[in-house]
Image 1 (tube, rainbow, N blue to C red):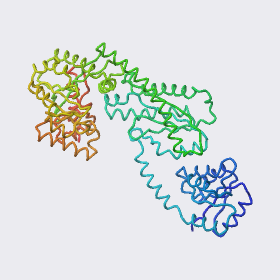
Image 2 (cartoon, rainbow, N blue to C red):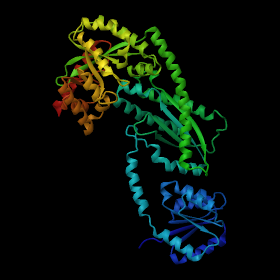
Image 3 (tube, one colour):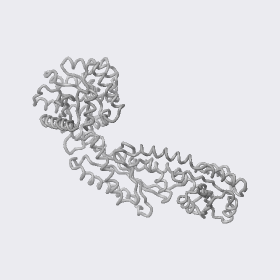
Image 4 (cartoon, helix red, strand yellow):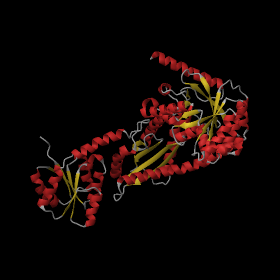
Length: 569
């Protein structure tokens, strides 16, 4: 036998409560009472009644506020709410609709009307609400950040609304990892996922001691930033800079904690931006909007700090270019079939201890600061000096250049082209399209000039962005360098496998070779080999080094480990 339904009557007028008890007797339900808005909210949250009758004008919290609070949270959203008032104005009815009320009763009550409406709400049941809850559970599993295991804001929004309603105020902190693109580009996605996980753990540990009842969330799935929500009621935050001082201290504690876990990283590579704010509960504004507006305020504070950081970085980069403080590195590229070294990609890195130690960070920021050509010039100059001092040993060398640079007259007469022509068959221009090539016919002429000098051509990031099938068909490259985005988790994603297989087939038809970059795991190595990719490159094979023999030794060691793993299997 099912339990009797529960109806909560929230009204400070005892006569009204007694009258409604009499009216509801035929419905055979249990009736509980609350005498003000706060008590009504507390009882509703603990008893979870089937129907709540709320007097609009109650002490402590109005019926509108209680209704909004109940409907804003998943646990109580399925409770049917009926607002009661002595006023029947259209404005009052619209207000009730806006806060989520299910029905509306106007005093003085009509017995038959009360019984009819409450009976309909009790008969509605909760099956629809339960179905929504089940669907939401499935959705929430997809909204957990895979790297950190932290929930995103969408999962905890109901709890945040409860905190804001119960406490009347709430603090929000936004934490963003500084130079996260550079960290991932230099160390690879697998390392960066572990880095994110450790940052999340350090953040949870830090806020546990700093803030009361704090919730840590990932900004979004696969992101590099976090939100912390915490209670502020009763804390002394009257001074304007109180939260700012707290955030500065937390920033340094995070840096120290993460640096301890990753001692191999340089000090300047680990940094965080932290922005904080406090919001007060305003019943006239939708709860979600209040929370998201507060999140925006906290993140805006970080954006201001990032702008200041960009000014500092621009100054630092100008100094690097002026003093020509760049280093040329060589990363081995091996044949997938036998692991033998095919050649090297020539990479340029900023000075150790600087913000531009990573190649991707160095060049991407140079483009943003409009210093790309100045940087490119000293990078080419330094690379040429290194190449002149070494034996090429019959190996290939890939040099990454943006397609836009080919329109620069300075580049076409650069001494590097002459050096490449003197050593025919050793060099490959690896073209990166940051902007679409508008005139393929003219651009093809540039490439033909280089090919006449024995310089081959590779298309970088094949399978993404501007490196389209049109560009591949129009330029007839000698190599297709498959983008890292397709290689990452390749072994587990059939769609990526189909795309790589398509590029391998296309390369075969055009006489080109395929080169997969960003190999970080044995699974990715095996997947590329099985799909017929010719050449491979990545941290699983070898890291970039200044000396070729060190890179060769690292590649040989990786191949030996691979063969050993294969023998065990």
